[in-house]
Image 1: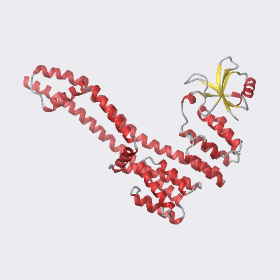
Image 2: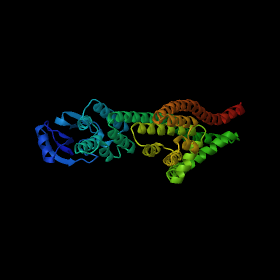
Image 3: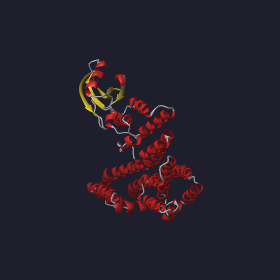
Image 4: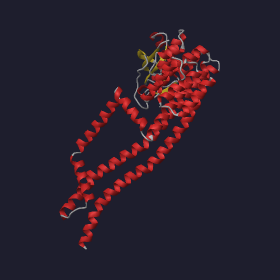
Length: 421
């Protein structure tokens, strides 16, 4: 049953808008007329729904009977991973309770408030009602449900344990979000400190130091070398600020563009893996993603080669991704996964050992889950150590820079006072 975005005049005389499913626009108008709404325009939704109203706090009526209100903010935002995780968890719970798939999807469509998510879910429900498999229906919305998601759902449908697979998929999405939050959260403080430090130093160099330079010039005394260095730096920044800013912006853009080329990305990712502290952390993050993805897919019944194909795409580092591709080719030829990963030299010995044990015992998915849990804890501890160590280092660096500036300004002033006495 198609979904329609509509605009109209409500019972109170105010403009209203929303989305609703109906057999045809004529049927929709009849249904809305029963609710006291006079329809002014109707449009078939297709993924991204258009609606009326004002952004922000504006409200629209939606759902059966139009009895509840939703925030129009959903029209202007995207669909968050947390929303997909919540949908997956709720669908797993409904299926486990014995509710048929089509009915469960209908219930979730009714309670979804984000119209950018509601319309695709309605199309998925309609496709399932028409006899399509859930995996095929989800596959038509690849921006929301990626290959990993669809592959696991397809395996769950084939094996008859879709509810369990959806539960594991929700766990996986939540774990991925948690890991991403840890990594991004660890970078917030250093970036803020760096920006504040640059702003402070720019103000000192452009506004404060030039004024003091005029005073020193009037005295005609020979200044200490550190003060002369400070004044020279201040003049360069003040006179060529726009050129410096443009040069830095161009350099950053050039580096970003270079890292997006195949050769540049490979060189950059290899460089990251070789860095003293960041390299081991990046390796653990990628191993955690790979192990958890492969474990989840194997447990859902996805074949090994297909699972490896999907798991390698989860990894952000292309060097480690190439190692997985090489391992997949070797596994196709009958070699052990642990042996081929060890040959690459990019996976920690503990990971290799646990995978080898899992292959011998026939419990590879359980061992991969343990690998993911182990390195998830290590990533958390490493990020904590990183931020704990970085905070005092940045404070010392900023404090030392400011102290140098202050000392370079005060030293000639004190010398002049001593000379006057």
